[in-house]
Length: 56
Image (cartoon, rainbow, N blue to C red; front, side):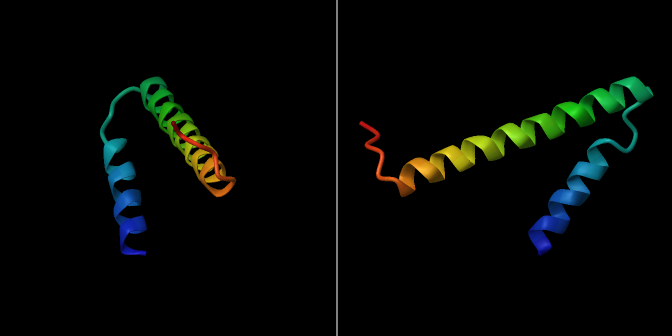
């Protein structure tokens, strides 16, 4: 729980004084897109490991 709150605080601090509203929204969208892609990759890796995929 402490780690989740720390990640949330880092996320909010990163966008606090960023500047123009378009730039701020662009970087927020890019951050969420990156998080989604990361979780898709994590899901695919866990799925492959659980089904016994040979990584050689």
